[in-house]
Length: 193
Image 1 (cartoon, one colour):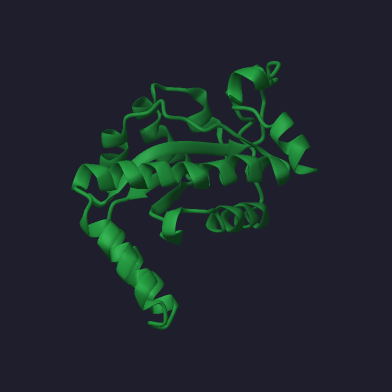
Image 2 (cartoon, one colour):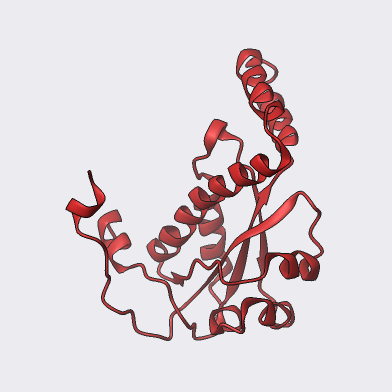
């Protein structure tokens, strides 16, 4: 499928048929997500992958019992990672210490941000990875539904996440059992000014 066709056909699936997406397809999706863009290439996210029925059922009430949670093949919980220093250290290590000026620039950027700004910044980065996830799923022949309709605090508690990982968006993936509605988007003249 051409990219234009992917974005035209992708939609927020409201229910899945419960069938499991083959692991090789999920692994392909993980690679598409892993290659997502991010500011400074810091990739300030972790993605908790849920595929067992029991955990999905525990998360359903914290998701207002929306059917996508229990009926999906895999539930991807995109968490903003506020431990930015750790990611800077990883980048420094990956470059073998040969990017000192770049690392210093990132360290200065991180040092100037209060905790709430770090979270806000990391959450904005998460959405870049979410874009790859939803379009990637469609390109691989299955469906998705980006969702903010959940209780992040309850998710963190149920999933026993450390404080630096803040659930930001959930993306159930699987095979749709619903029918997409016609795509409604604003006209170009209303978007491009």
